[in-house]
Length: 355
Image 1: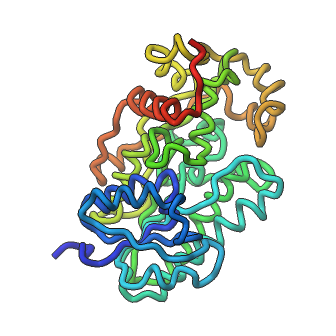
Image 2 (image 1 turned 90 degrees about the vertical axis):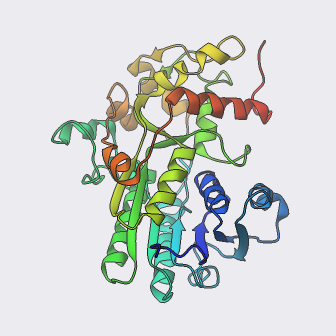
């Protein structure tokens, strides 16, 4: 008998989001019934991309009215579910009050979903979308690791409400999840820790920071160059596969770094040059660190000089071997993810060619 009964519905929070879109597609294609709690189940425009997926798949989707921050609002959607994916979380760098807009909502949202799992006898597993941001705060943190590489055993200890508040919110939320999971024994918690998510979305007009970032590679705002800022990157389609396997493989346990490439901004831009370099002002090199330090905070909301100091010209390295061995993830090439993503942004009319 399978660990998760395919006849039981599966709840996916944040189903209309960038990361969840491909996960919902995978579940529908595999024949599952997806319970999607959303703010407004009667908004066909907001749900049209998910409805299109369901129309062409053996599975089905049902919508429930819910709000991440309203206690008890997931009670109806979670009924009968053995598997819960909690992907919903605020992701923005442009905040006025990080505690109110990022940290409290991330923690409260996690608590609301997991406490509902506690009340629902059918739930066997919760898969939480956390982030590599819960593993590290700044690239300079790499210097404090044993072998110069981030692993699942590391926790972000350098972020706070004042410095890297988004990373801090992910850390606080994941710790809250482990705390709640540890106080019961009926369901188990499996955590997914992705790096920067790239690749085409189910919704080509998604409001994700990833879309904003990659769009800037072609709109001229980075024509003089990009900072040499190290990071990890993973395709959203591979990330969906990781979620699915984390939910359905009985032996999956603990945290999983989901990151295909140890890379940086100049390398991301370089993947776009062969196909798009003639039509768009793709950055061709790195700007000096002092320039990023001087000008960056004026151009990009949420970027501080401290962040520039602790991240630019520092590499980023993480060990993704657990995701390959335990979840069987086969990561696609960086160029494929970037070219597909950039092409989608063009096709959606969000970038205009200069040529």
